[in-house]
Amino acid sequence: MSDVIVLEDVTKRYGNEEVVKNASMHVKEGEIYGFLGPNGAGKTTVMKLILNLAKPDCGNIRVFGDPVLPDSYTYLRYVGNLIETPCFYEKLSAGRNLRLHCEYMGIYEEGRIEQALEQVGLQGCEKKIVGKFSLGMKQRLGIARALLAKPKLLLLDEPINGLDPVGIRQTRDLLVHLKEACGTTILISSHIISEIEQLADTVGVINKGRMLREMPMEEIRREAVQYLEVHVNDVRKAAIALEERYGRLNYKIISDSGLRIYQDLPFDEISRLLVQAGVAILNMGSKNDTLEDYFFGMLGEDGE
Image 1 (cartoon, rainbow, N blue to C red):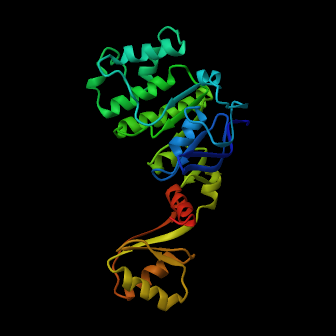
Image 2: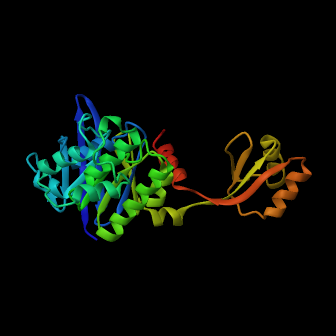
Image 3: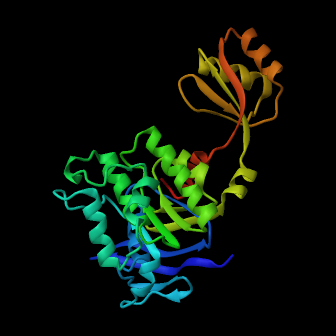
């Protein structure tokens, strides 16, 4: 698959502050790319650079194989986006807001507005005034606006902000449909890591303006560490019993009641040991590292 988005050693400064530092990124055609990072890490700025809403101080950006130059705008007719909080004419209807966007973008397909509203679960809301919409409805409307041009590339910055669980699931299903049925390439950021884990083909982690790593989700899952997670009534007592029995045991206390054991030890042996030590086991089970573990591991290596 070819790369739809390429960043090579891109830096962006605002005043004396480098908000993006020598960042490189590769988003492949037809994939969902999950973009993770703490607040202020540079995710939104990178998206603005891709959309030519901000100009890099150095480095190269290519979209659809062509360099993004200061006067490059033609490619944007094939790109839909939702960046930060979507803005609308509050006193106009949802349909009128989308119609104005269609006129601005030169979109004249009959029924496209109704179709976009239906895609995001806002069917029947075309004549409703946007100022009366909830935060979640405005977020859905922002996604609908991004879909109007049937984009080849979709950039979504925290698209499930303000959505209820039903809206989150509908949005997830919509993005999977766009990828599988339409071949849309999607770059999505979200603070809900479990959603990215369900959606993404590739994950990129950015922190303090620097891209730490890009990695396919399949590879993250393959590298996931398996461990035994035990929750007890007295975690310190449990730790002492384990150390007395096994010596240098690879384990970590994760909470007031929980610990993780990273060595392959039989369930029944651990259970028997803790019970004999007078420790009550609340629950115990085998688990694998999640994307959240991977993400915080990356930040830990970066000094967070």
